[in-house]
Length: 609
Image (cartoon, rainbow, N blue to C red):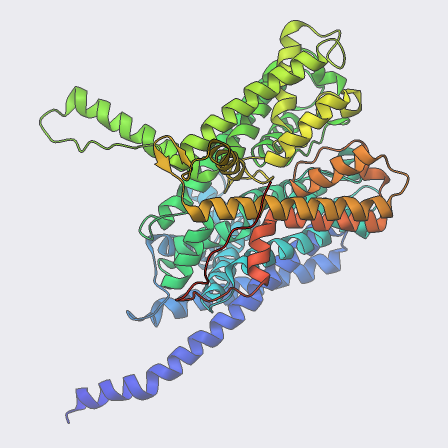
């Protein structure tokens, strides 16, 4: 055996295990430092600190920065081709951005006023370094979270656990001294954090008068995370920078976002984030245009108001930082564009991300087709049929029907009652807006107590139906309601098959839809029964409205929420959590699934009617 063979064996059998052990230790230290960095960041901006405490926090920042540089260097130097943690192009970009923080350390300060000086000052800025450290912390923690899914854990429980963690973190952040003007009780902080994370909109305190700008930023971040889902964000982050994960991880994530192919998993995640940011950005601009110069705000306040309400509407949260909400007299007149924009954002957020992806693919196909027809006749164009899948057709048709019917019903019933005294255009706009909000955003432009009982009962139906699956909306979902109605119609007609648009619905879809509705009604009734005992003086209609609103993550209330006692608020918190995670999802995660049997019992009939 020559020298090179002995060196190769020594490197592989003795040296590499030590190197891998060192890298793993460094990764563990990096995770701890990422948590320490986030904790120091929260402490600095959440508490009123002294100069001595600020110096300690900045020392923590510098220590974390050094550890991150060492960790990245070790991973690059000792990176192996067979390592499960690949370096994507974006990982290299993140590495370069991290190393650029060394420029002010290596080079002395250039002459002031020159272009080189401004470049040097940019990379020396604490905001640049803080942003890179924050990005790197998310990169490390999201990677570990996604790898946790590869431990054959229960996906429904992971989903529920992720929401629970965000709720608890949000509660802690809202209890920070700088998040509120005069402090807040922990139950109200828990209630608000749950309502924001579960994109519900029920509030036990007045948001604009209770929470400072920092507190309102925390609320809108909770809404954004809750609307997208923590696992969607962390999976995107991990796959974007890690390059690949285990097949099991990809299957779990694909099931969460309804992706039919592992090859399109990252692109689907990109579509979800892209659609969200694009729609919210456009909504923000339109809202700003509609309120500019009319609310007595500065430009910064107008932009924050627009961003807050755009995110709140698209995520179907229904939170507002305007005193009195969207029924504030400042916006009730000459702001029809604002209400129309919010209503459309609610509808877009409520149809679901799979529908938005399908619509994007269809639009892209037609653009490609017309481009080929005009410019590319020399090459072959692959024509496709059935561009819209059945799920897309059902959700879009049902959404349009519910919006139109809801607008007409509210307009007819309330034309000379709650909407009396308004111009015709305002009546139609407010009818549209108040038919959009019960599915499922808790905005109101007209106080609900001014509506008739018939309108409130109709709103309860809209609240139960909710929006599309895999959306930011709640309720039993449009898809489930449509399948149940189709099954009912088939039974009434005596048909053995449930069909729609020349497609026969599977037996499993019908069974699951009936189970979801039954479970929803059972939980809703249990909530009403318990709340009626906890709040014996509350009107029955207000209790029904409160429970359905919480379970459907709507956020509408007949002014009962602020009057609830401690146990009543905890009950509503539990119902909001179950409504956002999904009662059916939670039940299948908690109950052990029966193994598939290779036999079946003889069938029999039960007398019905």
